[in-house]
Length: 428
Ligand code: HSE
Image: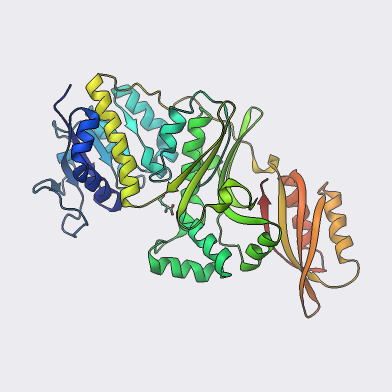
C-alpha cells in the first residue's frame, strides 16, 4: 500500500476549485477511508491569479500543464477544463505517462469516449467520469456496479438543471421563456451563452454516456436526437396543467427490440410521475431494471461542491485500486456500436397547439388529414377565441413519429390553419 497517492488537477474553474476544496477540507476523512493520504500536489491553469473560494497550499499552482502530466509523484490526473481540445490531448498524454485519469467532461466522453477507453486499456490505467453526468448524483457508479446485473429497459431523466429551473419558473409563475431565461442569466443559473443547455446539447451528451453504460454499446452522439426548450410558450405550460401534466426536458433511453431509442426533448408527463415533482435546478434519473424494478436518483446536477464530491469519489476509488493492485478492474465501455432507432420509428403520444379559423368544418379538415396518416385524435379542447381565430389543443393516441410529422406538415398548409404553434411528445 502506498503511503501517499498524488493528485494533480488541470483546470481551476468552478469544478476545479470545488474538487480542491473537497480534497483539502475532507483530507482526514478521505485518508481514513482510502487507507493512505490522498494529496493534492499540483493545480494547472492558465489563470492562477484570480482569487477562488479555496485556499490551496503555496507552490501548488502552476501555469505549466507538464508539471501535472510529467510529474512522477502524481498518480491521478484530474482533467477539469471541459470541452474537447486540449482536454483530450492532456488525457491521452496522462494515460501514455501511466497516470490514472478522472474527468467531468461530458462532451469529450460523449464524442471521443471509445478512443479514451481504448487508451486507458492499452496503458493499464483507470478512467473514471462520475462528475460528467448530473454533478453530485452517483448515477454512473450505480449503473456500473449496484445495478449492473439488470437488463435496463429504460432510463428517463431530468439531466439539465438550467432548463429545469426555467421550466419550473415558467410553470409556477406563468412567465414566458425569454423572460425567465434573462432572469436566470442574471441570477447566475444560466450561462451568458446558454445554447448548450437550452438547445438540449448538454443533456444529449449526458444521455449518450448513460445509454452507453446501460446498453453496453458505444452510442454515437450524432445518433441522439436533441430538441431544446426554446419553442415552449406560457400557453403550453397552462395547457399541460389542464391536462394533468407538466412539461420537462427529458432524456429518454429505451430498449426497443434489437435497437434503442435515445432522445432528448420537452415532454409532457403526468403530475403523478416521479419526475414531475423534480423542480428548480435539481436533476433526477429514473431507471427501470428487469430485476430491481424502478429506482430513482435525485440531487444537485451541477455546482462546484456537488460535482467536486463526485470527482473526489472517483479519485478515492482509484486510490483504493492503486493500493490493492487492482487498477483496470472495471470493464471499459468499448463494447462496439449501439444501434439507435431513428426518430421516424419512435411511437409515442403527442400534444399539439394550433391557431385556426373559427368556422364550421375546420376540425373536420384537420381530422381528415390525421386520418389519412393513421393518426388518431384522443382529445380536443378549443381555447380562447381572438377575432375569428381559435386556439385548438389536441392530444393524439400513440403513433409513429413519421406519420405524425407528415400529418402536421400537411395540416400547416391548410388555408384554415394560421399556425401550428407547438407539438410536444407525451410520456405515460
Ligand atoms: N449546465 C449544466 C446544467 C450543468 O444546467 O445542468 C453542467 O452539465
